[in-house]
Every structure is written in C-alpha cells, then in structure tokens.
Image (cartoon, rainbow over all chains, first blue to last red; front, side, top):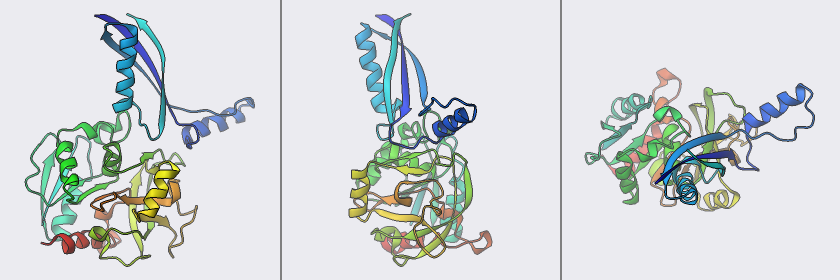
Amino acid sequence: MNRYRVSVHIVPRKGLLDPQGKAVTDALHALGFAAVDDTRIGRHLVLDVHAESAGAAEASVKTMCDKLLANPVTEDYQIASTVTV
Amino acid sequence: MKFGIVTFPGSNCDVDAIHAVTDALGQTAVSLWHRDHDTQDCDVLILPGGFSYGDALRAGAIARFSPIMQEVVAHAERGAPVIGICNGFQILCESHLLPGALMRNAGLQFICDWVHLRVEGSAPLYLSGYTPGQVLRIPVAHGEGRFVADDATLDALEHGAQVVFRYCDAVGTVTDAANCNGASRNIAGIVNAAGNVLGMMPHPERAVESLLGSTDGLALFESLLAQVGA
C-alpha cells in the first residue's frame, strides 16, 4: 500500500447563486479590480489515503465526494492534485 | 399519539418540539438520542432544528449518517410521518428523503424573524387543519435556508402539489420581497411524493402559544393528530 495526499476543490455549481462569492466580487470591484467577473467560494479538502496506486486513491476520493464530501444537488468537485507522501 | 424527537449533537430545538407536542398538543413525546436504533414505537418522528455536528461540511451532512437515521428512513418508507424542521429539513434533504438542498441565505445574514407563509399543496396529514391559501405567521431562524433544486425537480414538486408552504407577504401574495432567504420559487416547506415526510425551514413548534406571539403552527400538529389518531 502507498500513501497519497489527494486535494479536492468543491465549489457551488455554476448557475446557482453563491452569495459569499458575489459579496467578494463586489468588494474586489470596490477595490478597483474591475477585471473580476465572478468569484465562487467553496471548500478545499486535503485527504491522506492509502491505496495501491494514485488512480485507486483518486477513484476512492471520487466515491467519497459522491457519497458525502460534495452535495450533488448544489456542488461540483474536482480533484486538484494527487501526490505521494 | 407518541412523538419521538431526535437529538443530534448540536440540536437546540429538541426541547421546543417536546414542549409543543406535550404541553400544547397534549400528547406523549420521547427524546431519542442520535445513536439509538430503537424509535420506541413512536407514531411520528421529528428531526428538530439546531446545528447538528456544528454544520461541519454542510448543514445536515454528517447527521445523515447518525445511527438512528436508518430507523428514520425505515419509518418514512413505511409511510409513517416524519417532520424535519430547519436543521431537520436540511438533514432530510441530505438523506434524500426529500429532494433539493438548502444553501446559504441569499443575503448572507442569519435570519431570526417572523415570516408569513401561504399554505398550499396537498398533504392532508399536515394541512387538514388549515384552509388552502391561509396565511400563517411563523418564526424562522436560519443561516442556510435557501431551498434550491433543478428546474425539473421544482416542476415535479409543483405538479405533485408537494410545495406546502411558500414565503409570502401579510396578505398571502408571493413576492420577491417576502422571500426572506432567496429560496427557489419562495419555497419554505415541501413534502415527499407520498405526503408523509415534511421538511420546512420555519419553526411551527415555536408558534403554538399566543404568549409567544402566534398559534399558527399548532394546526400542523393537530392535523397529524386528527389524521393519525390519538
């Protein structure tokens, strides 16, 4: 068994109002960052898992996202990185 | 009639629910711990408001896996009444006993206030004590109460008459201004297709005594009593 550190981004699904993200976009505009079109605020999870391979670790984390870590109604998730630890 | 009120770590409206059921409705209530597997032959199960597991991950996401939820799901699948209020509604959605999800209020602020609700839909178990279109005054207290679902789900809820409470103004008109948390189509409460599982963000258990400002929530519990029997 190898150990992997898998990072997951979870963000509110596009098209759904993200009031935190909107507040931050408005604040950035107020600061003069007119280039910002949209901000979405979600969660970043870092999981240390043991698995036979990096692919198996990612598959396992995807199942975790589908069952618990992300809400399929409101959120999208993406595995950002998988590194050996 | 016997009510079971489930207490999760972080529930804080369980005692209010017990008070409403026993002192206002005159029925029996037992407190059920989230780790229990025995629902003690209760006729009705209530998942109360609060912040189960500190809302970690998402409101209701962890409570869904509490041991007693297996029995709550079985109770619901038998067609027996299950009510989720506020955090309880969030748990029912996370458990897939009800469709949709509850997201952060559109205005970002936690809302603790009185709101008006219009009674609609078809759920005799909970609504027989109300008249269709009746306007209720019931308190809300939530930070993540904005009901969302995709359009197909919302249409199915509407066609099935499963939307039972909608945020409205004092005369019953459903307006954007009355939509306190920005919920899709002003939805404040829904039932499942069978009509036995109710989820709502407002707190009917806090509106059962005139001393506390409203008795508009009492008829919900009286409807149950009339339909299920003492």
